[in-house]
Image (tube, rainbow, N blue to C red; front, side):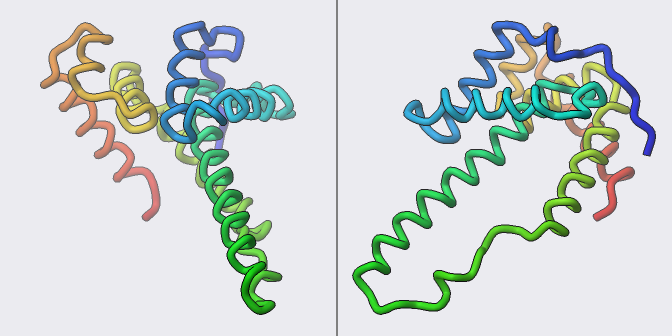
Length: 171
């Protein structure tokens, strides 16, 4: 799969982008952990050897935050389960890792790269509307106001984007 470099770079992320990313993290993990999750996401992006091929750094950060929030939830669940099991008899299931193995992790990264490639093929208005709606969770009305178009146009953009993905991604 060829990489097409996008004109969007990490340096072009604005204060508004940071605010949106932080708000997303806050919604996912709460105010107590949001700063740490955002910092970890930026560090993951900055420490990647292949960051120059990431076409949408903003979308990448949202995806990393979503993954980190799931990891955070799993960690807190494991701690709660461990505390509960400490009071019970020893259970062999506590020794089994429920984390995905290297094959699943690699497969997920390849699927994500394919998703970003297909996302990059969308026309700018549809891509922007898709990211704002599906990744950041904004409503059609909020997106319409932000992009200066009607809510009906946003609805059409999102339908076109979903049809685009359905025709290009394997199910």
